[in-house]
Image 1 (cartoon, rainbow, N blue to C red):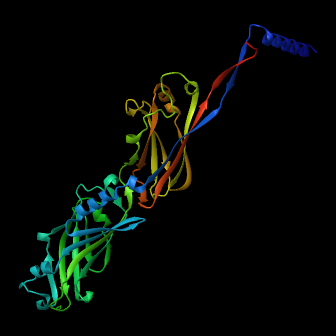
Image 2 (image 1 turned 180 degrees about the horizontal axis):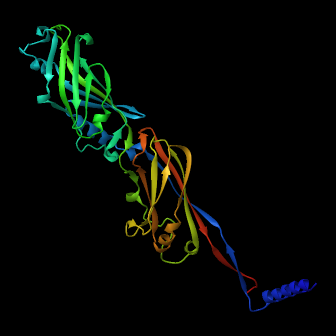
Image 3 (image 1 turned 120 degrees about the vertical axis):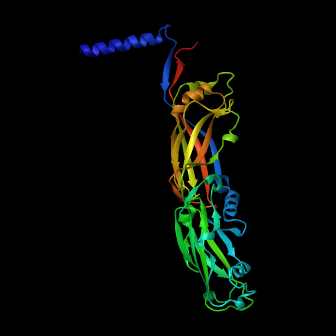
Length: 365
């Protein structure tokens, strides 16, 4: 009974205080979450990888006697047709200086010997544009002889070498040029022998070529920055603040306790990627003090990822105008393929977690 009495007394006192002239308002604390869409972006493979750089690198590496053509978009594949010896080059190496192949007896002839090897491919310093020095999974290659009616009439045996490796090859038999290519040094034709099964016709015109397919299926040897909006950051504040007069939004940001960036995406590039998000001081055109947040972007569609940007809150409060820089990174040691028909479609929005105190009058003024 006494407990009921004390509770009743406390209630009466509370009502008296609320209705007295000494108290004119109460404060209501709220923890709302505010969502702010900030961007949608569609990044094509041509934004990420410059195929002209790739063609230029391949053409320079294989030399002026090579023709480089694109064979496929998915995966991105190039074909290289490298002429090693034309018919006159071959005749020049055969003893007796025959004027045509009708005067060449059947049997083997040395075209290249180890004491006079030929440089076939120069990969010193070669980079594939923004991809850098990638380790290609395989390079299917074949040594062929063209310009004769019956391929069995001519056989080629050769040895290719680098400073640390070598491989023996025969005409008409496929082999993998990848292990030599991935050394990124020079590939030499150390030895080459041509064998005629019989004398050819006088109008025969054999040409020796190396045909290489280069599918861009590879492993990354170091982190590669593929894309950034650093040079295209909007000049206004991401929340529309002017920095001159306080407004409701500034008050909300002052009470911000958490900040999460949500990203929905489709990644059909064939590349496992990472996204780096960095606070940006627009006025000074540079990053804010807090470090970047990085999350993985896997291959696939209808994917989501969250970036915890709570560490950027103080930068955001102190920097007007403030914005965000997004950087797409191809991570080291990842294996991927280039799908030139693919793209990276992004939809981004922010969740702002706040702790707002709202004064509410309890009597008319």
